[in-house]
Image (cartoon, rainbow, N blue to C red; front, side):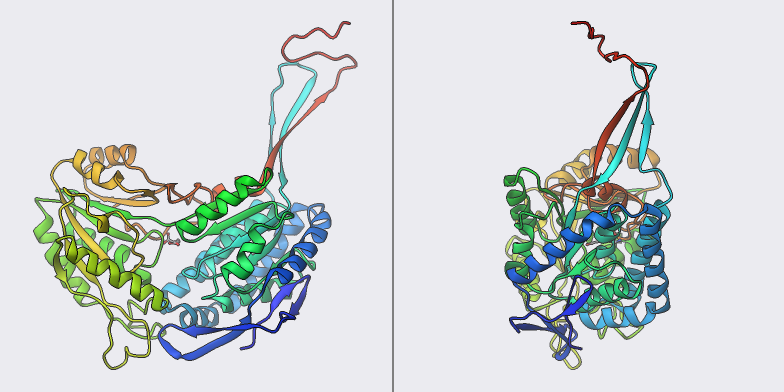
Length: 496
Ligand code: UN1
């Protein structure tokens, strides 16, 4: 397909004529589409129309804004299967995961539609009886939404739907790996008749299209989900602009803590899902399984046996558990960390790596790499994000030791504890550093109406529904005196 940008309610090619190819990572011979490689001039046009549209969009009834989202959901539901199929072609996730991604996007949009009839402020008390005081939420203006490839439908909805509901206008710059899903999102907004300029799509790459958007003086908020180094650059440049806000969610080095009393079958299933779904390429994927030494042998054996049964292949095949990784850069990075584990003295339990046999040669397929390693020397491989099917099993003796290993990383996003003992679960809940925690569940599978976001290098804690509202609105105070004289809250006299 020949994709376009969507600016001011029109489908437009970049006038400069440059394009890029959207490649199927399971078969690099297959070009899924060709999309405009936008630059600063395209971005300027999009920001201009978004600013113009803002003045009318913010004045529209919040309920009417919500209705556009409801209509959007109806279109998505009718085409969910096709959408999932195209997603699998474009990003390589197994088809059942692509369906789940679409469902998550539906949930998010429904949640925001429902919110349209709920209060957008509070009535609060005043020190003075004759005064009424309110807290109101007001939109921030023009929002840049920059999203990653691994949830090409759901994550854009996390960023876009709250922004639109609250009365902001949006410029969306998706990952250059998943332009087709972004194009579909723009199509749905077009088909529901969203007023021109309220939602705009700019396709292209970070340096040429993303950066001009982030640094544009007329963008009020940058919402970003992606890697920590890019997020850090975004936060830096936004901080230098006195009025610009950045909400970033940026990865993790997530862990599952398996206690000595754990249900081991549940522990293995939780670990398999957390380590290998999306081929380990979720920011919430677990690459550390911190396991009590009493159960580590039994756990490791069952985990490796199960991992060996994982079916790797074309993501549109229903039997496939793990598709390819996204591109050659990902293959190189994962290979680097597999080698680093070896160099740092890991005991390899399952030798994974690039698959190049029949059926795999055309794509970026990698198999699970599992190793056992002590934490004593603080190995680098146990502290850096890998983003691939690469997982360590790390022994611990006391809960204090598990907490130390868990927290001794620069990230703090998702964690899970597997135990039957509520006291251990509670201690870990209180002592571990995380944004999204689970008991007897995988570290993946967050629900949209809960907070999502992490501590430390993982982010600002804002990029999802229930918390993102705080990034895309100002809370303002509005205080009304109903008396005919002035009485001051702190007792100041009005007499001159
Ligand atoms: C991500 O990993 O980038 O919690 C987002 C999950 C999904 C979202 C993951 N709901 O697994």
